[in-house]
Length: 185
Image 1 (cartoon, rainbow, N blue to C red):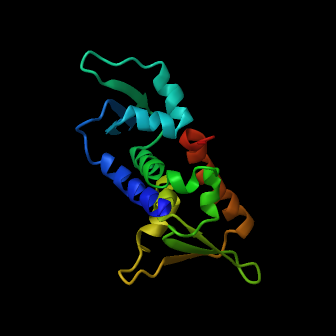
Image 2: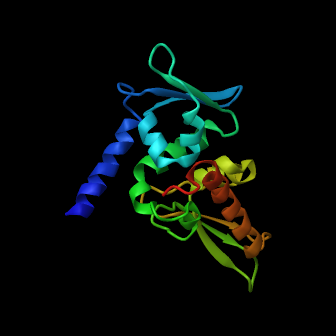
């Protein structure tokens, strides 16, 4: 019963991203010409992210009751993912470092085969994170979207060693981790 309750509760949190009615903060994300303004709920952000709690602590509300911060060091696409992960998957990953996302394949949507014989390794990953973190991977992955029959997209990089690709994956997740998810608990 408690599991069902928290599962439903976390599904309702994603609706907060779509509902501006009670938002009390605007977050300007990105650099020109790729800037997006997000409206959010300060209390939720503060309790979900120590990074944002620190950023918001010194920020006073304007006369209209809204706070405003600028985060130019992250793309709007990545921040959208961060918000969704923070709202949707917080209860699942609350006691873990987000580097654990590399080990949990439940939400992966692509398999990547790297290396040549006999050193081939298959990784599972989040296509959105890879696309937003690397223009090279974005170009390579654009034509490999998930099929309608829920078969994961698959791509091969025979000229990249498995060890190097593991480091790449970890660095992409760790960059997100350092930005918002560090020490979530």
